Length: 371
Ligand code: SF4
Ligand code: SF4
Figure 1: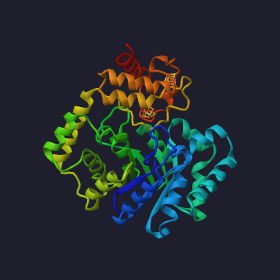
Figure 2: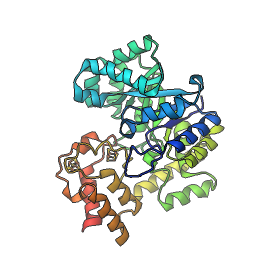
Figure 3: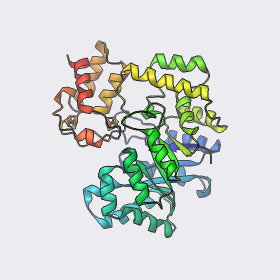
Figure 4: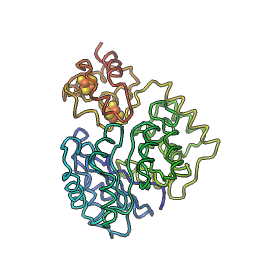
């Protein structure tokens, strides 16, 4: 299999404010181009696009292409199981996912977002044994889990569940040595347990695809023909035990670009790795907020603050807004409430896979746009 996978969590939208307004004709074109160029791996999940991603991939992929020309991954939503507190729910959700996707088996199936909290849920509901049973029944080919916590917990989970075949890790050149995300150490733990790795967030929610002008210039100096995204995806794919790098592609151009340089994948040379280290240093100097825009923090916010949208705007203007940006900020806040309305309940921080200090970051946003 080629090492690039199609992440189905950032599909093109007709209305950028509405995560469910997926541009279906464009998704079909993207799927077709991806397959035409010899790539096969699609990664969806129960929650993506407000719960629509699985059905959309059924219509765009499963119903339009032979089953043996693609591999499909989906995930057991541990967060939903936590809310519902039901054993039967696990089986019902899995059957619903098969129906939504229009398949009778998943090539890859993961427990979604294992962390200290959700691991307790998975243990209580015996979720690892459940997915193993589904594998024995022929409904799953390969079992894994996606992971958003530290290397110590990863070591514990892999020690307690050696039957798992692969892990999906957040890994990119900016987080590689980040003291919170700890991509490098997590990768080493997975390798020590003999597991293959799927990479998520190789471009950190688009941040490494659209870095600051200083970073663009640095990368272009070393290779004027390579897009910033290509540096990030090649960094992840260059790691020996990585068998798949997921890219959440949002338009046909991104599919064309990614499949272009990944068709005949060439690992980064040591000199190119050094360039990514310089880029990471420059990004840290930029002072942008390392939010990936995943939106996990939003639903539980009692103040309905559009957190990722505010962080994206802050990063776009690097914290120095002009009058037009302040208007834009006002429009974003009108959909919920402004950064200054945060009551520091920290629900968002518990939900954030990047372990961001959201409350502190919102103070920076307040200062930039409301003072
Ligand atoms: S800490 Fe602030 S932003 Fe986070 S959930 Fe609470 S009110 Fe919302
Ligand atoms: S603040 Fe964290 S949880 Fe919220 S969108 Fe950004 S990365 Fe995701």
